[in-house]
Image: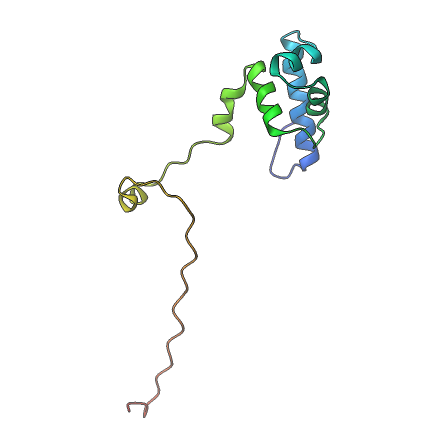
Length: 117
């Protein structure tokens, strides 16, 4: 199954779990072996592979590290790079917070003949 933006959370979790299970089996590992190497419980591996919503992200990262796919997170969440104009504005400083939307100017009062005073 291809994961798209229309996919539900449950279907994405189920697909990721199935892919993790397939990678584990490709490496000829049991759930218990994977859990031991990753430093998580066997139940955590079971939950990840079933698409359960309760596993912790740290457990997911540990399992991915043991399966040799942790370096792929760079593709999933790429490092942001500012545009050249932003680089000039920042002058070497790192951006630390988002800015508030700038208020728009109030609409100018319509001028009518005789309002010169």
